[in-house]
Image (cartoon, rainbow, N blue to C red; front, side, top):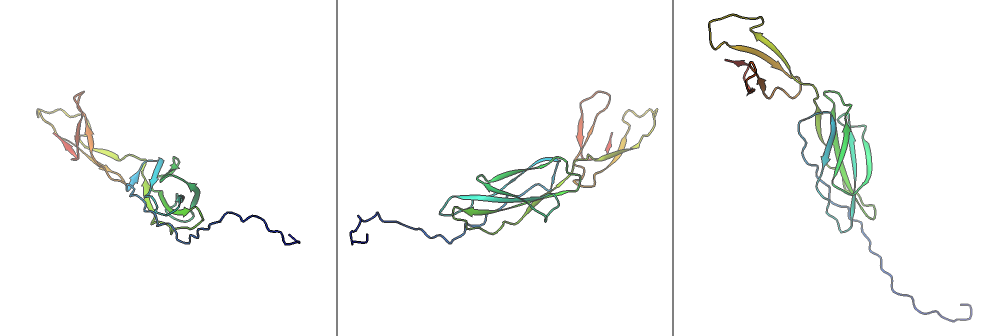
Length: 171
């Protein structure tokens, strides 16, 4: 004080200086195509001396502009792509932020393309009712899907069990 009286000594204080950013998270791979709806993005944990949160960015245009989600504690985020049209590219990327605000770089973006329309199948033959003596007639068709392609066809005949095939004919 003004007369020279001293107080008791305070307890010792400590300051930790952290200028090291967390390592950059890695996005998990996405399927090439997805149906419209909820799309789940996930990533690896960032390694840091302090607790980290994540800043996730996603786009319904395959890149900029990005929508940013701040302060995520977990390593995944669900993007609502319910109304997305066929061919829309849904992309995501993430960075880590530690408790004092050090930021990693953004991860490489990953993406998936929306495909909500089934393939078009066109019968080729027979196109009209056919009478024949052949006890094993052949049906043929063609199929096309502009985005993800045709993986297989399901063929049924007069209430029999369905047959799955990748071919374009049935005998």
